[in-house]
Length: 127
Image (cartoon, rainbow, N blue to C red; front, top):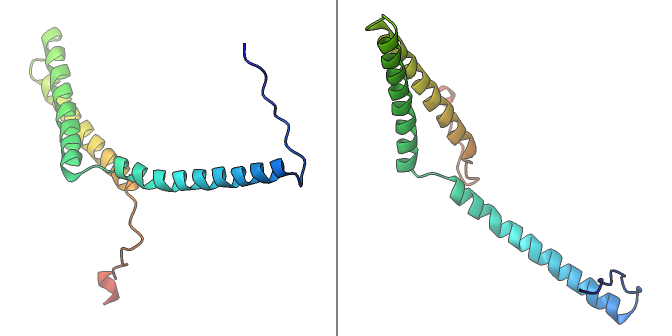
């Protein structure tokens, strides 16, 4: 069984106090450097390449259409609405796919930060 730690701080003005004050300052600097290094790493991993964005948006769109068509086919199998279940649910799947793509694109654009070095461009109306 381990002994309890001594959590008492040294008296101000003693050699032990100066050593712990220096240690506290070094720990604070190291934590600040670690936090500064972690921010660019998080932005790099959060960004998607153009190809991965395209695959994500395309797969969400196609998946919604396939799900709509599959549900429409199942409705037509069990109910006597031969072409209309497939047609209606296929169109609903298409609409859901468009909504998913718009939502995902807005989410990706909000997550992408504009670099501070990017110059502001004038509007066409300013000419």
